[in-house]
Each structure stands twice: as C-alpha cells, then as structure tokens.
Amino acid sequence: MKTALVTGVTGQDGSYLADLLLRKDYRVVGMVRRLSMENFGRIEHLLDDIELVQGDLLDQMSLIDIMAEIKPDEIYNLAAMSFVPTSWKQPVLTGEFTALGVIRMLEALRVAAPNARFYQASSSEMFGKVRETPQNELTPFYPRSPYGVAKVYGHWITVNYRESYNLFACSGILFNHESPRRGLEFVTRKVTDGVARIKLGLQKELRMGNIAAKRDWGFAGDFVEAMWRMLQQDEPDDYVIATGEARSVEELLGLAFGHVDLDWREHVVVDSGFLRPAEVDYLVGDASKAKRILGWEPEIGFEELISMMVDADMELVGRTVAARGR
Ligand code: NAP
Ligand code: G4F
Image 1 (cartoon, rainbow, N blue to C red):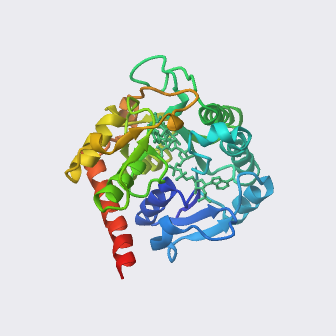
Image 2: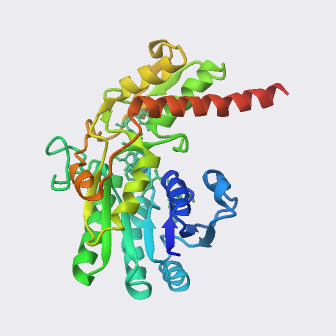
C-alpha cells in the first residue's frame, strides 16, 4: 500500500484528491493546520478513512517531522493562500505560504523523504498578461498579482530542486477548476450560490467585478486525476492541465441564471469594488502534452459543470430555507 501526504486536504482539490487516492487504495495522510475550530466540511465523508497530522507551511520543523514520521511515497503540495484578491491585501503572508511554503516542503523532503515523489500545485495565473494564446509549458510567465508572482517562485524552485538534487518533483500548471466544493468567494461558486439565493428569495442582486474576463474552466474531479498521473510516470516533468476552451464571466452568468429560468441582467450589478489592481483578462490552455504523455483529458464540460454547481447550491440553500421555516 502506498502512502500519500496531501497538504491542503481541507481545500477543494485536497478533498477530491483524497477521494481519488482512497479509491486507488492508498494510505492517505492529510496535513491540517491548527485552527480554533475544525473546518472539515469538505472531508467529513472521509474522516474514518484518512489520517490527519498537524503541520503548517510556515513551520519548517513541523514539515520535517511529518515526513520523517509517515515516510510518504508521494507528496501532493496543494496548500496555499489561493484567492487572488487577498494576495494584494496580504502580500507578505501570500509570499510566505504560496512561495516560501514550497521550498519548506522541498527542504523537508530533501532531508527526511528524498525518495518521495513530489507534486507542486502551480497555476495558470503565472501566465497573467499572456505572451501567447493558448498557453503551454513553454509560454513565458508574466504574473499579474502577488499570488501569481508567489506561484512563479514555487514553480521554479520545484524545477530547480529537481535539477539540483535529482528529486522526482513535478509541477502541474493547472487552469481554473471548479466544483460544488469550490470556496464561495471564487467567481463560479459566487455566481451559483448567488443564483440559488436569488431563486429561493434570500437575495435580490449579485454584485460582480469584471464580467468580460475569460477563463478556461474545468471540473476539479477531472484535474486531480492529472496530478496523480504525473507522479506515476518514469520521469518527472511539468504539465499544463486545461480544457482548451475559454468562456467569459458573462457567459457563466447566462448559463447559471438560465439554468433556473432567470435573466442575469435583471439581477447582476457591476461593482467597481470587485475590480482588481491588475487583471488577467484571458486565459486558455493547451494541454496536448498531458494528453500525449499522461493520456489525460477532461471528462466534464463547462455547461455540465455549471449545471452541477447550480443544482448543488439549490439543494444546499434550499435546506437553509427549510430549516428557517421550521
Ligand atoms: P483552497 O480550496 O483554497 O485550499 C487551500 C488549502 O491550503 C486549504 O486546505 C488550506 O487550509 C490550506 N492552507 C492554506 N495555508 C496553509 C498553511 N499555512 N499551512 C497549511 N495549510 C494551509 O484551494 P484549491 O482550489 O483546493 O487549490 C489547491 C492548490 O492548487 C492551491 O495551491 C492553489 O493555489 C492551486 N491552484 C488552484 C487552482 C484552481 O482553479 N482551484 C488552479 C491552479 C492552482 P485551511 O482549510 O486551513 O484554510
Ligand atoms: O474565480 P476567480 O477569483 O479566479 P482566478 O482569479 O482566476 O484564480 C483562480 O484560478 C487560478 C488559476 O488561474 C488559481 F491559481 C487561483 O488559486 C484561483 O483558484 O476569478 C476569475 C475571474 C477574474 O478575472 C475575476 O476578475 O473572474 C473575474 N470576476 C468578475 N467578477 C470575479 C468577480 N472574480 C471574483 N472572485 N468575484 C467577482 O465578483
């Protein structure tokens, strides 16, 4: 039985990856940071099947101790401060978590688990003000946020440790991926939750930022499969993971409101408070290397993804409404 260590197991991707690794009969150890109250909402269904250890990307010794103790075969470094707007409000902390956190993980691996295979959660946000379209593994980076800059550091330090110490370290450059487990502040979930609240009478309007922005949106459940496949290859490498199709936030609004027979124009208010100091206008990925080498392709398309998310939020918000009525 292989042992996998997953940082960020309480997050969207961590929870889907833990589901997948359990299906593949791994021993799954999730690293969680100490909070005054547990936030196990996304992994509640897994708590009997996974082990949890306490550690923090800010604390080097905790990472070394965990790796020495559990002796992982595979390490998936998903933990990060992942919300782009917060990276302007807390740029130093973002650098500590999202950039230096990666080298702390790699240093721990180097001293305590040098034979473990390592996955780094890199991001299409590194392409930022894009140099070419679509973006592939050779496209130069031009990050547009403190988050994107931190991810560029995490990406290159992973490549550097692979080349310096001959580690099996891979970096997945993942384009946006979403699900019913997505955090409420990200645009897809903000919209699907907003649609459910409007449809069920809990709110009237939805305040949005730049609705012209375009993203290449896939399903998180498909994307964690690509992470796993990267660590099963003979050689470590870096891969772009994307659907190859870009949609605008406006198209997202049309689909999500339309799914419950609402017209988004009657409810959406553009609010300059949600605009970013520097925007990433248009991202679309070329995942042909992942298709060729990993045999990976997305299964769930954008329409199906948004319908799934609206349906899930209708059910969730519906339960809140019913509980209030009791
Ligand atoms: P998420 O839902 O925001 O989850 C982030 C996870 O990191 C949470 O489990 C969080 O723990 C943990 N974390 C944050 N700071 C930590 C620290 N100092 N020590 C230990 N754990 C810490 O993010 P996600 O969407 O699952 O994304 C997973 C990774 O992929 C992130 O690195 C993200 O930047 C990257 N990524 C995501 C996408 C995407 O579209 N989703 C695309 C490209 C790359 P708490 O629960 O305690 O807060
Ligand atoms: O959903 P978002 O906040 O995601 P963003 O900034 O693309 O970042 C996500 O994907 C990255 C991969 O490229 C990850 F690395 C990162 O961790 C995160 O998961 O915003 C998407 C777009 C942006 O252009 C934003 O300006 O939607 C636009 N948008 C328009 N109105 C909005 C809103 N975004 C948010 N969050 N809220 C709005 O009201």
